[in-house]
Image 1: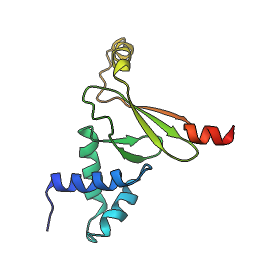
Image 2 (image 1 turned 90 degrees about the vertical axis):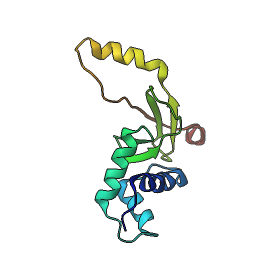
Image 3 (image 1 turned 30 degrees about the vertical axis):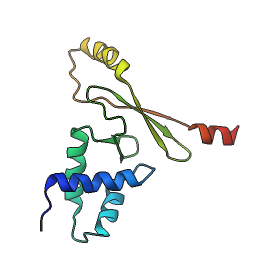
Length: 131
């Protein structure tokens, strides 16, 4: 039986919300297959695409992994601080960056479809443990 798109999105978001680290599409698939063994990779990829288009999840381009949107922002720039040691991701609202980013790209008549900023480094806990 095919699930409706909204129910599938809810399932994927539940899996992402339950994990404190970014997850790849195949990690999400494995979790979903615990309750629905017949779910296929294309279904998960389509669902993740819809969620990222809606701004309800973010794809970490550098890690090819996903995290749920935690800021619930509409017209903003998600700023994701990714710890290179423990893998945690903190999301920040980069609304103040949007006008400056737009001004930069307007110089070349470039029109952005979406914005996402990834910052790689160490979270407070990992930085403190190496100090």
